[in-house]
Length: 392
Image (cartoon, rainbow, N blue to C red; front, top):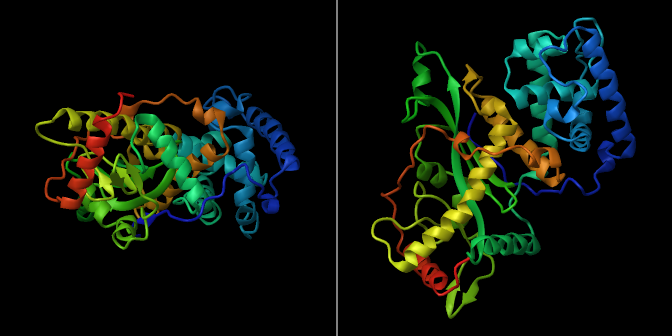
């Protein structure tokens, strides 16, 4: 399967979308379901692998409100299929049961056997339910992952970025992380996925807003691809080159005209719409630019740390994953990440972040082969502007 890109229109989770059954009645159903579900797990002797069964948030790492909303999104897809899944005792899995199984699998990264033992299911049932959930989420939740479609949305993003570290007209932060896999060394096709750190991996590129929401993603490329190469093969880059993205209003700052742009680390190319840090000897102005640039860039590292901390199926080494399905699993995790933000989920927001976890063991890449004069002029203008501002 080729690289997956996310760029559809987003709808906030707190807006009305009751055509899928989201509302107070669904919330009550969710609470009733949890009471019954946790009781059946205890009675079935499957309590030991799952601690604090009375604590919903500790099990699923999301609030009941977010869980119910997710159920409303995938309801039609998970209940319209003719195939019926059952527990080992013969009882049918409800909509809520299926969502619980899938979220547990994606959230913990535990093996099929471990999840099956916890819920009283067959391994194959866990696998099929999770995949059906991923497919349903891909169809029903893409509106939660998109580039801003209105000027008002973009103005809000740029305003928040400027409040962070003073960067004017900044529209996002781009970064990458590696999804590692455990593949068979005897399979010659595995070498395609062997990266520079001698891991089998797939790369994920994201563009992030000030709230750590993903605005655009690319995944599916082998982890050995350089960051700059992934970016230059992305739809986002092509849209920018064609003037269809980052083409909004320019800002005039002290007679300097500054266009819209995103920022990234030294692994990305310097372009008129992509600002990267200065290298080599630094003047006072370029040092100030680098300081503010780094402070703003941390939002992407935090977003990726939360993604991998919340949906652990993509944090550790995945055991011989289906490499055609894997990009769609990654997309599903990114959608769940954004849904939690759009739902203002306090449980997700409280998860501790460890910035080292999102790409531990990978060295900083340096893109030295691509240089754009207009990009350099744009960066110098930004540097001059920032050097004349009071330190933030």
